[in-house]
Length: 181
Image (cartoon, rainbow, N blue to C red; front, side, top):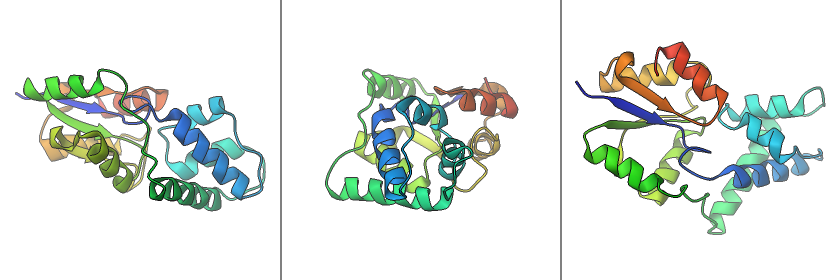
């Protein structure tokens, strides 16, 4: 029986925290709002973008949808300028490749949208190793277990043969809700 190992992307495989924060600062400033701190931004990484922005706004006025659009535009401009997403953490490519070569089924469960996920996998050279790709779209996103349920159904691997590797409590809560280690 095969074993499925699912990875989060941001903060787990890819060191993207500073890039995400830079884009969040640009998005908030584009809407005339004081930007969140790096620590506050780190706490929402992994959530659906609008949900995370809503948490960053707190009781301040502002539209999560408008800020999310500004975030996406800032990211688009960054890509158009040829600036890559954050690098893989040291040793992550070798880890993923080694697990794949040992026969593990590998997948991704991320709050990124599918286009962003596919771009990261392509630019980092990981796409050939990944069997199942689960993104925050369609909703619901983390910590709801829907994306893990989709990965299990897609691969035919039962929850007791699946491991979720992430860097936030949202990853842990999602795994627990899906019955995944």
